[in-house]
Length: 310
Image 1 (cartoon, rainbow, N blue to C red):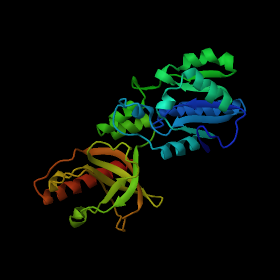
Image 2 (cartoon, helix red, strand yellow; image 1 turned 45 degrees about the vertical axis):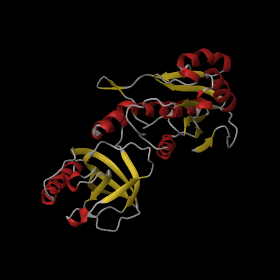
Image 3 (tube, rainbow, N blue to C red; image 1 turned 30 degrees about the horizontal axis):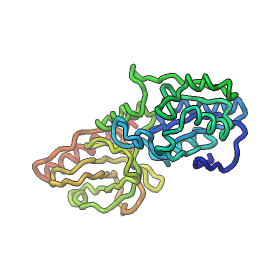
Image 4 (cartoon, helix red, strand yellow; image 1 turned 30 degrees about the vertical axis):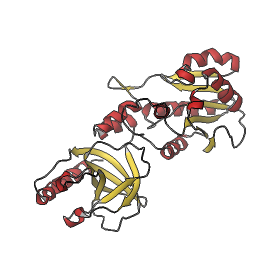
């Protein structure tokens, strides 16, 4: 996949099938759009193009996103787009100037003149251009004038609920990582580096990797204890992870700490990806360190039982 940074293109286009959006999370509904773009591009002997933004438009415009943080970083999304078969990613720096472009102007200057679109795929309810005036109906009205065709992927549902990035953020904000995974189509993960902590875990027999997220805008699931899988040096390990302020030791600093089963090597400064498989319990304050240690043994047994089925 070739990445372009609007308005510069690394090379001119001849024919393309285009879609546009933030695609945060690249969930099950998004995948249908990507599949359609790739299939239409093959059928029309064109290139599959995705136009996206370096920052979520709702954040730039100060609008509520439905849960704080991004489901996927730009790097994570680009990797998924490439694996899906997208040929070109056109990344636009979203700002007030871009937000002020009339939808008709955007279609003419970007889709038609720049990308030479012969077909445009939209998702249900997608809007673009100044004031969100651009939608699928507008594209249908402009299609004959500009010589492209268009179609819309209908709304996707699970158990009568619409699949949306907002709903998935809400699941994660409540710690419902298993529900989020069903809507995403994959397990939610968080990447970062291992940094030094207070080493309490090591003292009580549960050494932990204290994780600093690589992107501060990435959504962190609700406080609690989770069964997780962790990737380090391309190897996956089973473990459990605590997100919270560690009330038993009266800490006010929020941390993300993972205990990896059977891993006894020095982890500091290593890159790590945590995959949240299932929430085990709330974070809670224990009467003593011994009581905490006893609970951690129970958490480990619970996590091992959950992960054995994955």
